[in-house]
Length: 350
Ligand code: UT7
Image (cartoon, rainbow, N blue to C red; front, top):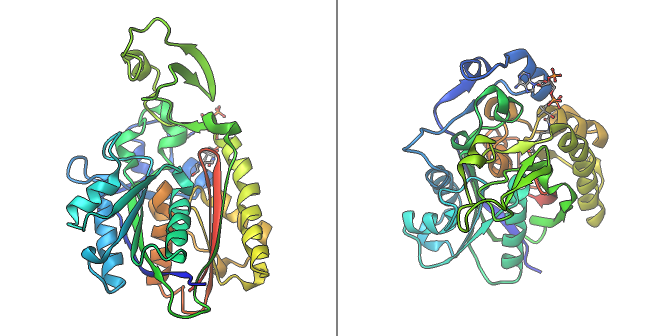
């Protein structure tokens, strides 16, 4: 069977660096708390108007396409993962198609938050393996800075996130032993409200800490989609019970890595590099410990960029590749966990 391989990888992060100390201008926080709990030292924020989720994606995609040795006109399918799209609809995929002057190819948008990139990669992998497409552009991009609560009320979430984009081009592998060996996708909606942005939405509820606290039966028809009340209650910002997310992540990420290894009759000692979704350095360290991997086999860059959700894995993959940490023949393992909950893994023979 034909496998798919990553033929090119690219990334883009905005120029503007915001250190932990910079955030103290907006909220009651401090460098010590942020570093101790998350490992994050700084993050990047996009220029407020000039840069969007799509413009950052295009920067990353341009590099990935060039490295794959093709042009935007060769792309025959686009898959775009983000939770911070330019518009509520349409998705960013069509904007990439338009701005990069691609042919009238299909564009699919994926909404799986921190697992978005791995879900996108898995879909692309099936299309290549099935022979339907030859050059698929897979993107993860986020502009979180536009939609975070920068007051003290939102500090448990806003200090974590950063902006950026990563992209890969998937092609059929020419060598038999090369490419994506398998992908593994999971979800458990029981905790859907534990890490969520509730509005705008069509459920008609006010939420707090994962619980519906009131509904909108007193609101006029057509006005409950986004009301002033919702904004006053910070419903337009992400809401998270961080400890529940943390506890689940450190169980599910090692589990789905083992699932991938077992499916390919491999063991943890076969892994050359593990790239976990950059949620929190403490989560990555715990996953590393459970899998008993040495430091040099785990790649983290959350210290510089914060958590960039769907972009974190392709950014880390790109940076690891640029630093020469990924070589031909290496076994690369990617894994994610996030809102939904959704979690995933991919094993790649580079
Ligand atoms: O990509 C996947 C999505 N998210 C994650 O993976 C996040 C997983 N969870 C986490 O990383 C951690 O839960 C956090 C880093 C988000 C929070 O750490 P925590 O140890 O769970 O803190 P907490 O929310 O329980 O808050 C502990 C204390 C509270 O103060 P009191 O009530 O003990 O006085 C908070 O008000 O820390 C306070 N706090 C802060 N203090 C300074 C919360 N945020 C901040 C802050 N600066 N930014």
